[in-house]
Length: 258
Length: 258
DNA sequence: CAGTGGTCTAGACCACTGG
DNA sequence: CAGTGGTCTAGACCACTGC
Image 1: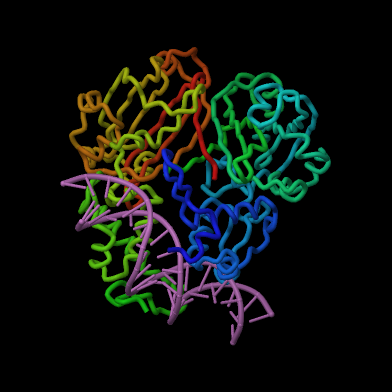
Image 2 (image 1 turned 90 degrees about the horizontal axis):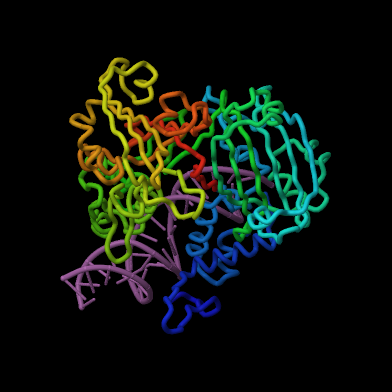
Protein backbone atom coordinates (compact mmCIF):
# COMPACT_ATOMS: atom_id res chain seq x y z
CA UNK A 1 0.00 0.00 0.00
CA UNK A 2 1.22 3.54 -0.65
CA UNK A 3 2.91 4.96 2.41
CA UNK A 4 0.30 7.59 3.06
CA UNK A 5 -2.41 7.40 0.44
CA UNK A 6 -4.82 8.25 3.22
CA UNK A 7 -3.42 11.75 3.49
CA UNK A 8 -4.39 12.24 -0.14
CA UNK A 9 -7.67 11.57 -1.79
CA UNK A 10 -8.97 8.08 -1.14
CA UNK A 11 -10.78 6.38 -3.99
CA UNK A 12 -14.53 6.91 -3.64
CA UNK A 13 -16.27 3.87 -2.25
CA UNK A 14 -19.71 4.72 -3.56
CA UNK A 15 -21.80 2.13 -5.35
CA UNK A 16 -23.10 2.12 -8.87
CA UNK A 17 -20.63 4.53 -10.43
CA UNK A 18 -17.31 3.59 -11.97
CA UNK A 19 -14.64 3.13 -9.31
CA UNK A 20 -12.67 6.07 -10.73
CA UNK A 21 -9.47 4.71 -9.29
CA UNK A 22 -6.91 7.48 -9.34
CA UNK A 23 -3.24 6.59 -9.01
CA UNK A 24 -1.13 8.48 -6.52
CA UNK A 25 1.00 10.15 -9.18
CA UNK A 26 -2.13 11.60 -10.78
CA UNK A 27 -3.07 13.16 -7.51
CA UNK A 28 0.45 14.56 -7.18
CA UNK A 29 0.16 15.86 -10.72
CA UNK A 30 -3.06 17.63 -9.80
CA UNK A 31 -1.41 19.20 -6.76
CA UNK A 32 1.52 20.42 -8.85
CA UNK A 33 -0.91 21.81 -11.39
CA UNK A 34 -2.69 23.66 -8.64
CA UNK A 35 0.58 25.22 -7.52
CA UNK A 36 1.22 26.32 -11.10
CA UNK A 37 -2.23 27.86 -11.36
CA UNK A 38 -1.76 29.62 -8.05
CA UNK A 39 1.52 30.97 -9.41
CA UNK A 40 3.43 29.50 -6.49
CA UNK A 41 6.13 29.02 -9.13
CA UNK A 42 6.12 31.42 -12.06
CA UNK A 43 7.15 30.87 -15.67
CA UNK A 44 10.91 30.49 -15.93
CA UNK A 45 11.41 29.68 -12.25
CA UNK A 46 12.71 26.44 -10.75
CA UNK A 47 10.37 24.23 -8.82
CA UNK A 48 11.59 22.26 -5.79
CA UNK A 49 13.68 19.16 -6.42
CA UNK A 50 12.04 15.77 -6.79
CA UNK A 51 13.22 14.76 -3.34
CA UNK A 52 11.85 17.91 -1.74
CA UNK A 53 8.50 17.39 -3.41
CA UNK A 54 8.51 13.74 -2.41
CA UNK A 55 9.02 14.78 1.21
CA UNK A 56 6.35 17.46 0.95
CA UNK A 57 3.75 15.05 -0.42
CA UNK A 58 4.99 12.08 1.60
CA UNK A 59 5.44 9.82 -1.40
CA UNK A 60 8.50 8.30 -2.98
CA UNK A 61 10.68 10.19 -5.42
CA UNK A 62 9.65 7.85 -8.22
CA UNK A 63 6.03 8.83 -7.82
CA UNK A 64 6.80 12.53 -7.98
CA UNK A 65 8.96 11.75 -10.95
CA UNK A 66 6.11 10.19 -12.87
CA UNK A 67 3.86 13.16 -12.14
CA UNK A 68 6.53 15.58 -13.37
CA UNK A 69 7.14 13.40 -16.43
CA UNK A 70 3.58 13.94 -17.55
CA UNK A 71 3.65 17.67 -16.90
CA UNK A 72 6.88 17.88 -18.86
CA UNK A 73 5.31 15.92 -21.72
CA UNK A 74 2.53 18.53 -21.78
CA UNK A 75 5.15 21.30 -21.87
CA UNK A 76 4.02 22.72 -18.54
CA UNK A 77 7.39 21.99 -17.01
CA UNK A 78 10.85 21.67 -18.50
CA UNK A 79 13.44 19.32 -17.03
CA UNK A 80 17.11 20.18 -17.18
CA UNK A 81 19.50 17.56 -15.99
CA UNK A 82 21.81 18.76 -13.30
CA UNK A 83 19.94 22.06 -12.93
CA UNK A 84 16.41 21.34 -11.91
CA UNK A 85 12.86 21.42 -13.19
CA UNK A 86 11.49 24.74 -14.45
CA UNK A 87 8.11 26.20 -15.23
CA UNK A 88 7.85 26.47 -19.00
CA UNK A 89 7.64 29.92 -20.55
CA UNK A 90 7.01 31.39 -23.98
CA UNK A 91 9.81 33.87 -23.34
CA UNK A 92 12.47 31.21 -23.59
CA UNK A 93 14.54 31.16 -26.72
CA UNK A 94 14.07 28.03 -28.76
CA UNK A 95 10.44 27.57 -27.85
CA UNK A 96 9.28 31.03 -28.85
CA UNK A 97 6.41 31.08 -31.30
CA UNK A 98 5.68 27.50 -30.39
CA UNK A 99 2.13 27.84 -31.69
CA UNK A 100 3.10 29.41 -35.01
CA UNK A 101 3.28 26.69 -37.63
CA UNK A 102 4.05 28.86 -40.64
CA UNK A 103 7.39 27.93 -42.22
CA UNK A 104 9.27 29.30 -45.20
CA UNK A 105 9.03 27.00 -48.23
CA UNK A 106 12.80 26.93 -48.64
CA UNK A 107 14.93 25.68 -45.80
CA UNK A 108 13.18 23.58 -43.23
CA UNK A 109 14.48 25.75 -40.42
CA UNK A 110 11.74 27.72 -38.76
CA UNK A 111 11.81 31.47 -39.01
CA UNK A 112 12.90 33.23 -35.88
CA UNK A 113 9.33 34.42 -35.68
CA UNK A 114 7.88 37.50 -37.33
CA UNK A 115 10.63 39.86 -38.34
CA UNK A 116 8.57 43.01 -38.47
CA UNK A 117 5.31 44.40 -37.18
CA UNK A 118 3.74 46.67 -39.75
CA UNK A 119 0.61 47.71 -37.88
CA UNK A 120 -1.11 47.41 -34.57
CA UNK A 121 -4.62 48.45 -33.73
CA UNK A 122 -6.69 47.97 -30.59
CA UNK A 123 -10.42 48.32 -30.00
CA UNK A 124 -12.69 47.63 -27.11
CA UNK A 125 -16.05 46.09 -27.90
CA UNK A 126 -18.97 44.10 -26.53
CA UNK A 127 -18.69 40.37 -27.15
CA UNK A 128 -21.25 38.96 -29.56
CA UNK A 129 -22.78 35.67 -28.51
CA UNK A 130 -20.48 33.37 -30.45
CA UNK A 131 -17.27 35.09 -29.34
CA UNK A 132 -18.44 35.13 -25.73
CA UNK A 133 -19.23 31.44 -25.93
CA UNK A 134 -15.78 30.58 -27.19
CA UNK A 135 -14.00 32.68 -24.58
CA UNK A 136 -16.19 31.45 -21.76
CA UNK A 137 -17.67 34.92 -21.19
CA UNK A 138 -21.19 36.28 -21.20
CA UNK A 139 -22.66 37.94 -24.26
CA UNK A 140 -21.96 41.66 -24.07
CA UNK A 141 -18.94 41.33 -21.83
CA UNK A 142 -16.14 43.76 -22.63
CA UNK A 143 -13.58 42.38 -25.01
CA UNK A 144 -10.34 43.69 -26.52
CA UNK A 145 -9.69 43.27 -30.20
CA UNK A 146 -6.14 43.59 -31.49
CA UNK A 147 -5.50 43.72 -35.18
CA UNK A 148 -1.97 43.42 -36.46
CA UNK A 149 -0.02 42.88 -39.62
CA UNK A 150 3.21 40.93 -39.51
CA UNK A 151 5.96 40.67 -42.09
CA UNK A 152 8.21 37.69 -42.61
CA UNK A 153 11.45 38.32 -44.46
CA UNK A 154 10.23 41.74 -45.49
CA UNK A 155 6.86 40.81 -47.03
CA UNK A 156 3.56 41.22 -45.19
CA UNK A 157 2.39 37.65 -44.60
CA UNK A 158 0.17 37.44 -41.55
CA UNK A 159 -2.92 39.51 -40.83
CA UNK A 160 -4.24 38.73 -37.42
CA UNK A 161 -7.18 39.58 -35.19
CA UNK A 162 -6.91 38.73 -31.52
CA UNK A 163 -9.79 38.77 -29.03
CA UNK A 164 -9.23 38.83 -25.29
CA UNK A 165 -11.33 39.32 -22.21
CA UNK A 166 -10.92 43.00 -21.30
CA UNK A 167 -11.14 42.09 -17.62
CA UNK A 168 -8.29 39.59 -17.74
CA UNK A 169 -6.08 41.77 -19.92
CA UNK A 170 -6.91 45.13 -18.39
CA UNK A 171 -4.37 47.79 -19.34
CA UNK A 172 -3.13 46.18 -22.54
CA UNK A 173 -2.18 48.91 -24.98
CA UNK A 174 -1.07 49.25 -28.59
CA UNK A 175 2.10 50.90 -27.36
CA UNK A 176 3.03 47.97 -25.16
CA UNK A 177 2.31 45.51 -27.97
CA UNK A 178 4.29 47.47 -30.53
CA UNK A 179 7.26 47.97 -28.23
CA UNK A 180 7.47 44.38 -27.00
CA UNK A 181 9.89 42.41 -29.11
CA UNK A 182 9.03 38.82 -28.12
CA UNK A 183 5.97 36.68 -28.71
CA UNK A 184 2.60 37.96 -27.49
CA UNK A 185 2.29 34.92 -25.25
CA UNK A 186 5.44 35.94 -23.38
CA UNK A 187 3.97 39.40 -22.89
CA UNK A 188 0.78 37.82 -21.54
CA UNK A 189 2.84 35.91 -18.99
CA UNK A 190 4.80 38.94 -17.86
CA UNK A 191 2.07 41.57 -17.79
CA UNK A 192 -1.00 39.55 -16.91
CA UNK A 193 0.20 36.29 -15.37
CA UNK A 194 -1.58 34.35 -18.05
CA UNK A 195 0.39 31.33 -19.20
CA UNK A 196 -0.90 29.76 -22.43
CA UNK A 197 -0.62 26.03 -22.41
CA UNK A 198 -2.31 24.56 -25.44
CA UNK A 199 -4.43 25.61 -28.40
CA UNK A 200 -6.76 24.24 -31.02
CA UNK A 201 -6.80 25.47 -34.60
CA UNK A 202 -9.42 25.32 -37.34
CA UNK A 203 -7.99 25.88 -40.77
CA UNK A 204 -9.74 26.86 -43.96
CA UNK A 205 -8.96 28.21 -47.40
CA UNK A 206 -10.64 31.58 -48.00
CA UNK A 207 -10.55 34.46 -50.46
CA UNK A 208 -9.04 37.75 -49.47
CA UNK A 209 -11.54 40.58 -49.39
CA UNK A 210 -10.56 44.04 -50.62
CA UNK A 211 -9.25 45.32 -47.29
CA UNK A 212 -7.34 42.15 -46.48
CA UNK A 213 -5.85 42.05 -49.97
CA UNK A 214 -4.57 45.58 -49.65
CA UNK A 215 -2.99 45.00 -46.26
CA UNK A 216 -1.34 41.78 -47.33
CA UNK A 217 -0.44 43.22 -50.74
CA UNK A 218 -2.10 40.50 -52.77
CA UNK A 219 -4.76 40.61 -55.49
CA UNK A 220 -8.36 40.56 -54.25
CA UNK A 221 -9.80 37.05 -54.24
CA UNK A 222 -6.31 35.62 -53.75
CA UNK A 223 -6.59 32.40 -51.69
CA UNK A 224 -5.43 32.75 -48.08
CA UNK A 225 -5.14 30.35 -45.22
CA UNK A 226 -7.57 31.16 -42.42
CA UNK A 227 -6.31 29.89 -39.07
CA UNK A 228 -8.70 30.21 -36.17
CA UNK A 229 -6.97 29.53 -32.90
CA UNK A 230 -8.46 29.06 -29.45
CA UNK A 231 -5.78 29.24 -26.78
CA UNK A 232 -6.07 27.79 -23.28
CA UNK A 233 -4.38 28.37 -19.92
CA UNK A 234 -4.03 25.90 -17.11
CA UNK A 235 -7.31 24.25 -16.38
CA UNK A 236 -8.36 24.28 -20.01
CA UNK A 237 -9.79 27.74 -19.59
CA UNK A 238 -9.97 29.48 -23.00
CA UNK A 239 -8.22 32.85 -22.81
CA UNK A 240 -7.73 34.00 -26.38
CA UNK A 241 -9.36 33.69 -29.75
CA UNK A 242 -7.18 34.53 -32.70
CA UNK A 243 -7.91 34.58 -36.37
CA UNK A 244 -4.94 34.68 -38.67
CA UNK A 245 -4.91 35.10 -42.44
CA UNK A 246 -1.70 33.65 -43.85
CA UNK A 247 -0.24 34.18 -47.28
CA UNK A 248 0.96 30.79 -48.44
CA UNK A 249 2.78 31.71 -51.63
CA UNK A 250 6.20 31.67 -50.01
CA UNK A 251 5.35 29.94 -46.74
CA UNK A 252 3.30 26.96 -45.69
CA UNK A 253 1.60 25.68 -42.57
CA UNK A 254 3.65 22.78 -41.31
CA UNK A 255 2.15 19.97 -39.31
CA UNK A 256 3.53 16.79 -37.88
CA UNK A 257 1.20 13.80 -37.51
CA UNK A 258 2.00 11.11 -34.99
CA UNK B 1 25.64 -1.43 -12.91
CA UNK B 2 23.05 -2.91 -15.23
CA UNK B 3 22.91 -6.67 -14.91
CA UNK B 4 24.23 -7.35 -18.36
CA UNK B 5 24.94 -4.12 -20.16
CA UNK B 6 27.97 -5.83 -21.64
CA UNK B 7 25.76 -8.11 -23.71
CA UNK B 8 24.26 -5.02 -25.30
CA UNK B 9 26.01 -2.15 -26.91
CA UNK B 10 28.68 -0.61 -24.73
CA UNK B 11 29.07 3.14 -24.90
CA UNK B 12 31.77 4.06 -27.39
CA UNK B 13 35.04 4.97 -25.72
CA UNK B 14 36.45 7.03 -28.57
CA UNK B 15 38.02 10.38 -27.89
CA UNK B 16 37.02 13.78 -29.17
CA UNK B 17 33.39 13.07 -29.96
CA UNK B 18 30.50 13.38 -27.57
CA UNK B 19 30.24 10.33 -25.30
CA UNK B 20 26.86 9.45 -26.82
CA UNK B 21 25.82 7.66 -23.68
CA UNK B 22 22.86 5.49 -24.51
CA UNK B 23 20.64 4.25 -21.69
CA UNK B 24 19.73 0.59 -21.59
CA UNK B 25 16.06 1.18 -22.27
CA UNK B 26 16.96 3.02 -25.47
CA UNK B 27 18.86 0.01 -26.64
CA UNK B 28 15.90 -2.21 -25.75
CA UNK B 29 13.66 0.18 -27.64
CA UNK B 30 15.90 -0.13 -30.69
CA UNK B 31 15.77 -3.93 -30.46
CA UNK B 32 11.97 -3.88 -30.23
CA UNK B 33 11.84 -1.53 -33.18
CA UNK B 34 13.99 -3.92 -35.15
CA UNK B 35 11.60 -6.76 -34.38
CA UNK B 36 8.72 -4.60 -35.60
CA UNK B 37 10.56 -3.78 -38.81
CA UNK B 38 11.38 -7.42 -39.34
CA UNK B 39 7.69 -8.17 -38.90
CA UNK B 40 8.44 -10.58 -36.08
CA UNK B 41 5.17 -9.24 -34.70
CA UNK B 42 2.64 -7.94 -37.21
CA UNK B 43 0.08 -5.14 -36.89
CA UNK B 44 -2.71 -6.19 -34.56
CA UNK B 45 -0.74 -9.00 -32.92
CA UNK B 46 0.34 -9.24 -29.28
CA UNK B 47 3.98 -8.94 -28.42
CA UNK B 48 5.49 -10.99 -25.56
CA UNK B 49 4.76 -9.87 -22.01
CA UNK B 50 7.04 -7.43 -20.25
CA UNK B 51 8.46 -10.22 -18.12
CA UNK B 52 9.19 -12.41 -21.12
CA UNK B 53 10.94 -9.56 -22.87
CA UNK B 54 12.87 -8.74 -19.70
CA UNK B 55 14.10 -12.32 -19.59
CA UNK B 56 14.92 -12.31 -23.28
CA UNK B 57 17.00 -9.15 -23.04
CA UNK B 58 18.32 -9.92 -19.55
CA UNK B 59 17.17 -6.65 -18.05
CA UNK B 60 14.60 -5.83 -15.41
CA UNK B 61 10.92 -5.52 -16.21
CA UNK B 62 11.01 -1.82 -15.41
CA UNK B 63 13.55 -1.21 -18.13
CA UNK B 64 11.49 -3.03 -20.75
CA UNK B 65 8.54 -1.09 -19.48
CA UNK B 66 10.19 2.24 -20.16
CA UNK B 67 11.14 1.16 -23.67
CA UNK B 68 7.57 0.07 -24.39
CA UNK B 69 6.25 3.29 -22.88
CA UNK B 70 8.07 5.31 -25.50
CA UNK B 71 6.98 3.09 -28.36
CA UNK B 72 3.41 3.36 -27.11
CA UNK B 73 3.73 7.14 -26.93
CA UNK B 74 4.77 7.07 -30.60
CA UNK B 75 1.73 4.92 -31.41
CA UNK B 76 3.87 2.02 -32.56
CA UNK B 77 2.49 -0.17 -29.81
CA UNK B 78 -0.77 -0.12 -27.91
CA UNK B 79 -0.99 -1.25 -24.30
CA UNK B 80 -4.13 -2.88 -23.01
CA UNK B 81 -4.26 -3.56 -19.34
CA UNK B 82 -4.95 -7.17 -18.51
CA UNK B 83 -4.60 -8.25 -22.13
CA UNK B 84 -1.12 -7.43 -23.32
CA UNK B 85 0.78 -5.07 -25.60
CA UNK B 86 -0.15 -5.03 -29.29
CA UNK B 87 1.37 -3.78 -32.48
CA UNK B 88 -0.62 -0.73 -33.56
CA UNK B 89 -2.63 -0.95 -36.77
CA UNK B 90 -4.61 1.41 -38.95
CA UNK B 91 -7.28 -1.28 -39.30
CA UNK B 92 -8.39 -0.85 -35.72
CA UNK B 93 -11.63 0.94 -35.13
CA UNK B 94 -11.21 4.18 -33.23
CA UNK B 95 -7.84 4.99 -34.71
CA UNK B 96 -8.85 4.67 -38.34
CA UNK B 97 -8.11 7.71 -40.44
CA UNK B 98 -5.70 8.87 -37.75
CA UNK B 99 -3.90 11.09 -40.25
CA UNK B 100 -7.06 12.71 -41.65
CA UNK B 101 -7.63 15.98 -39.85
CA UNK B 102 -10.67 17.17 -41.76
CA UNK B 103 -13.65 17.61 -39.48
CA UNK B 104 -17.23 18.71 -40.12
CA UNK B 105 -17.87 22.28 -38.98
CA UNK B 106 -20.87 21.24 -36.92
CA UNK B 107 -20.38 18.73 -34.14
CA UNK B 108 -16.88 18.21 -32.90
CA UNK B 109 -17.14 14.47 -33.43
CA UNK B 110 -14.90 13.27 -36.21
CA UNK B 111 -16.48 11.75 -39.26
CA UNK B 112 -16.23 8.01 -39.46
CA UNK B 113 -13.93 8.65 -42.37
CA UNK B 114 -14.91 9.15 -45.98
CA UNK B 115 -18.42 7.88 -46.56
CA UNK B 116 -18.15 7.34 -50.28
CA UNK B 117 -15.51 6.89 -52.98
CA UNK B 118 -16.64 8.54 -56.17
CA UNK B 119 -13.67 7.74 -58.38
CA UNK B 120 -10.45 5.84 -58.45
CA UNK B 121 -7.76 6.00 -61.08
CA UNK B 122 -4.32 4.44 -61.24
CA UNK B 123 -1.36 5.21 -63.48
CA UNK B 124 2.19 4.04 -63.62
CA UNK B 125 4.84 6.63 -64.38
CA UNK B 126 8.51 7.50 -64.12
CA UNK B 127 9.36 9.57 -61.07
CA UNK B 128 10.45 13.12 -61.80
CA UNK B 129 13.41 14.32 -59.78
CA UNK B 130 11.50 16.08 -57.01
CA UNK B 131 9.08 13.19 -56.41
CA UNK B 132 11.94 10.69 -56.39
CA UNK B 133 13.80 12.79 -53.89
CA UNK B 134 10.87 12.93 -51.53
CA UNK B 135 10.21 9.20 -51.73
CA UNK B 136 13.85 8.28 -51.40
CA UNK B 137 13.96 6.82 -54.92
CA UNK B 138 16.06 7.55 -57.98
CA UNK B 139 14.83 9.82 -60.72
CA UNK B 140 13.04 7.74 -63.32
CA UNK B 141 12.13 4.92 -60.94
CA UNK B 142 8.70 3.44 -61.54
CA UNK B 143 5.99 5.03 -59.44
CA UNK B 144 2.25 4.46 -59.01
CA UNK B 145 -0.10 7.40 -59.01
CA UNK B 146 -3.55 6.95 -57.56
CA UNK B 147 -6.13 9.64 -58.01
CA UNK B 148 -9.36 9.48 -56.07
CA UNK B 149 -12.35 11.53 -55.17
CA UNK B 150 -13.96 11.12 -51.78
CA UNK B 151 -17.31 12.30 -50.54
CA UNK B 152 -18.16 13.23 -46.98
CA UNK B 153 -21.83 13.23 -46.04
CA UNK B 154 -22.79 12.99 -49.69
CA UNK B 155 -20.78 15.90 -51.11
CA UNK B 156 -17.47 15.46 -52.92
CA UNK B 157 -14.94 17.03 -50.57
CA UNK B 158 -11.51 15.48 -51.03
CA UNK B 159 -9.60 15.14 -54.27
CA UNK B 160 -6.43 13.22 -53.71
CA UNK B 161 -3.33 12.14 -55.60
CA UNK B 162 -1.18 9.44 -54.05
CA UNK B 163 2.31 8.49 -55.20
CA UNK B 164 3.95 5.21 -54.21
CA UNK B 165 7.03 3.29 -55.18
CA UNK B 166 5.85 0.74 -57.76
CA UNK B 167 8.37 -1.73 -56.44
CA UNK B 168 7.14 -1.60 -52.87
CA UNK B 169 3.46 -1.63 -53.83
CA UNK B 170 3.64 -4.07 -56.71
CA UNK B 171 0.24 -5.45 -57.64
CA UNK B 172 -1.85 -2.59 -56.26
CA UNK B 173 -4.93 -2.19 -58.42
CA UNK B 174 -7.88 0.14 -58.79
CA UNK B 175 -10.19 -2.78 -58.14
CA UNK B 176 -8.55 -3.57 -54.82
CA UNK B 177 -8.65 0.08 -53.77
CA UNK B 178 -12.27 0.52 -54.78
CA UNK B 179 -13.38 -2.69 -53.08
CA UNK B 180 -11.51 -2.15 -49.82
CA UNK B 181 -13.74 -0.46 -47.28
CA UNK B 182 -11.20 0.66 -44.68
CA UNK B 183 -8.46 3.27 -44.74
CA UNK B 184 -5.75 2.95 -47.39
CA UNK B 185 -3.14 2.63 -44.68
CA UNK B 186 -4.83 -0.53 -43.40
CA UNK B 187 -4.76 -1.94 -46.92
CA UNK B 188 -1.06 -1.12 -47.16
CA UNK B 189 -0.46 -3.10 -43.97
CA UNK B 190 -2.42 -6.12 -45.13
CA UNK B 191 -1.34 -6.33 -48.75
CA UNK B 192 2.19 -4.98 -48.63
CA UNK B 193 3.38 -5.24 -45.05
CA UNK B 194 3.93 -1.49 -44.96
CA UNK B 195 2.97 0.07 -41.65
CA UNK B 196 2.73 3.87 -41.72
CA UNK B 197 3.95 5.42 -38.53
CA UNK B 198 4.09 9.17 -38.86
CA UNK B 199 3.63 11.90 -41.44
CA UNK B 200 4.43 15.52 -42.13
CA UNK B 201 2.01 17.87 -43.83
CA UNK B 202 2.51 21.13 -45.69
CA UNK B 203 -0.67 23.12 -46.03
CA UNK B 204 -1.49 25.93 -48.41
CA UNK B 205 -4.49 27.81 -49.74
CA UNK B 206 -4.84 27.40 -53.51
CA UNK B 207 -7.34 28.07 -56.26
CA UNK B 208 -9.17 25.19 -57.93
CA UNK B 209 -8.31 24.80 -61.59
CA UNK B 210 -11.01 23.86 -64.10
CA UNK B 211 -10.64 20.10 -63.74
CA UNK B 212 -10.43 20.17 -59.95
CA UNK B 213 -13.42 22.47 -59.74
CA UNK B 214 -15.53 20.15 -61.84
CA UNK B 215 -14.61 17.08 -59.83
CA UNK B 216 -15.22 18.78 -56.50
CA UNK B 217 -18.31 20.57 -57.84
CA UNK B 218 -17.17 24.04 -56.96
CA UNK B 219 -16.73 27.19 -59.04
CA UNK B 220 -13.36 27.55 -60.75
CA UNK B 221 -10.95 29.67 -58.69
CA UNK B 222 -12.73 28.62 -55.53
CA UNK B 223 -10.20 28.50 -52.66
CA UNK B 224 -9.20 25.00 -51.60
CA UNK B 225 -6.93 23.64 -48.93
CA UNK B 226 -3.89 21.93 -50.39
CA UNK B 227 -2.49 19.32 -48.03
CA UNK B 228 0.77 17.72 -49.04
CA UNK B 229 1.57 14.73 -46.89
CA UNK B 230 4.75 12.70 -46.68
CA UNK B 231 4.16 9.45 -44.82
CA UNK B 232 6.85 7.37 -43.14
CA UNK B 233 7.21 3.74 -42.03
CA UNK B 234 9.45 2.47 -39.29
CA UNK B 235 12.92 3.85 -39.62
CA UNK B 236 11.67 7.16 -40.93
CA UNK B 237 11.67 5.81 -44.43
CA UNK B 238 9.27 7.87 -46.61
CA UNK B 239 6.82 5.52 -48.34
CA UNK B 240 4.05 7.72 -49.68
CA UNK B 241 3.52 11.20 -50.98
CA UNK B 242 -0.06 12.38 -51.01
CA UNK B 243 -1.57 15.62 -52.18
CA UNK B 244 -5.09 16.31 -51.07
CA UNK B 245 -7.34 19.16 -52.10
CA UNK B 246 -9.96 19.75 -49.45
CA UNK B 247 -13.14 21.76 -49.73
CA UNK B 248 -13.40 23.78 -46.55
CA UNK B 249 -16.86 25.25 -46.93
CA UNK B 250 -18.51 22.66 -44.69
CA UNK B 251 -15.43 21.13 -43.12
CA UNK B 252 -12.19 22.40 -41.62
CA UNK B 253 -8.73 21.08 -40.92
CA UNK B 254 -8.46 20.58 -37.19
CA UNK B 255 -5.20 20.80 -35.35
CA UNK B 256 -4.23 20.54 -31.73
CA UNK B 257 -1.18 22.45 -30.52
CA UNK B 258 0.65 21.35 -27.41
C1' DC C 1 32.17 18.33 -4.88
C1' DA C 2 27.37 18.85 -3.73
C1' DG C 3 22.95 18.86 -5.81
C1' DT C 4 19.83 17.78 -9.50
C1' DG C 5 17.72 14.92 -12.81
C1' DG C 6 18.27 10.13 -15.19
C1' DT C 7 18.75 5.06 -15.11
C1' DC C 8 18.27 0.54 -13.27
C1' DT C 9 16.92 -2.97 -10.17
C1' DA C 10 14.02 -6.01 -7.22
C1' DG C 11 10.09 -6.86 -5.15
C1' DA C 12 5.33 -6.07 -3.56
C1' DC C 13 0.88 -5.24 -4.54
C1' DC C 14 -3.25 -3.44 -7.39
C1' DA C 15 -6.49 -3.32 -11.48
C1' DC C 16 -8.17 -5.46 -15.34
C1' DT C 17 -9.09 -9.28 -18.69
C1' DG C 18 -10.32 -13.71 -20.09
C1' DG C 19 -11.07 -18.49 -19.58
C1' DC D 1 -7.88 -17.74 -10.95
C1' DA D 2 -3.82 -17.06 -13.73
C1' DG D 3 -1.69 -13.72 -16.58
C1' DT D 4 -0.95 -9.05 -18.08
C1' DG D 5 -0.19 -4.31 -17.58
C1' DG D 6 -0.11 -0.43 -13.86
C1' DT D 7 1.50 1.58 -9.47
C1' DC D 8 4.58 2.28 -5.70
C1' DT D 9 8.59 1.87 -3.00
C1' DA D 10 13.54 1.91 -1.57
C1' DG D 11 17.93 2.12 -2.68
C1' DA D 12 22.06 2.26 -5.65
C1' DC D 13 24.52 4.39 -8.98
C1' DC D 14 25.32 7.46 -13.26
C1' DA D 15 25.41 11.93 -15.95
C1' DC D 16 25.32 16.67 -15.91
C1' DT D 17 25.64 21.45 -13.91
C1' DG D 18 27.49 25.03 -11.31
C1' DC D 19 30.10 26.68 -7.52
